[in-house]
Amino acid sequence: MSTEQELREEICEIGQKVWQRGYVAANDGNISARMEDGNILCTPTGISKGSLTPDMICKLALDGTILSENPPYKTSSEVKVHLHLYRAEPKVMAVVHAHPIYGTAYAIGGVELVNKRMPENVLAMPVIPVAPYATPSSEELAENIEPYVHDYSVCLMEMHGALSWGPSLLAAYQGMERLEYTAKLTYLCDQMGFKDRELDDAEVKKLIGMRPQYGL
Ligand SMILES: [Zn+2]
Figure (tube, rainbow, N blue to C red):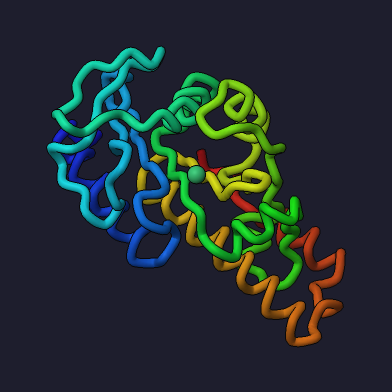
């Protein structure tokens, strides 16, 4: 298990990846991780995910009580959704929220992504569901996302963006990477006229059967 300092550093590293891959604009997005003692580290509001340093990271209890903030850095109000996921599923150790452009376009369309085009995607993420829209930072948004936490590792957030979670920060980040890759691949195949090119149902079933038990 990582120390608090190691987790703070890792949140900054994941922030760099999220920003460099263009998964967020300006100061958008947020990242959090659960520590061994059950408390949560999360990114502050109003800072680019590409400019984070470990001292900026905020610390909260699972009930949302703020335990430490390093002024002027303040806890993001959007972390409410993350806290819901941590409370709902003890195996969730990290959460990433971003607005990757292709994934967000499908989120605006309210389109669930069903992977039938590429073995790795079928294995890793057969379906990317869409959680119904609610105002950012609201209790309602957290409640809309919570039903997906046990059986999925990512979801699109209708009219908003994407969320990923997992047993580590790297796993949660990679979920976001896979989600955006899938969304982009879906868009390109449809645009290039390959809309009907999919693995047949028998092959999809075979691949899903090969799927290791969901990794959380
Ligand atoms: Zn957002």
